Length: 116
Image (cartoon, rainbow, N blue to C red; front, side):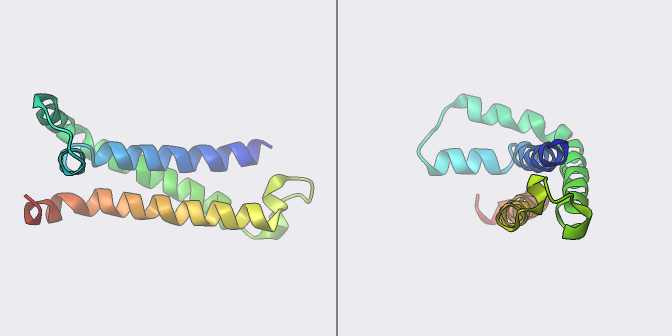
């Protein structure tokens, strides 16, 4: 059961840090696009100096999650949840969604001038 928690937590940490890494750049664009506005949106740029740290945390969490999720099924004891094929497929799908979020967080500052 501890293996299941570590897989979930590493995916959650990777996704959260990817969202925080893009909050300074992608956040204002998304908020204005859905109709929210206000002076507080400009305060999100204060997170820009922390962006490299968030990206580093997300990359490390993805590496850890990759090692746990894409290991051979034979290394997982049969009584653990990681031995269930449906669970393994769900974790792999979540991993690729989080990996896409991290790639967006890495690349969005370079593409942001095209949207403003």
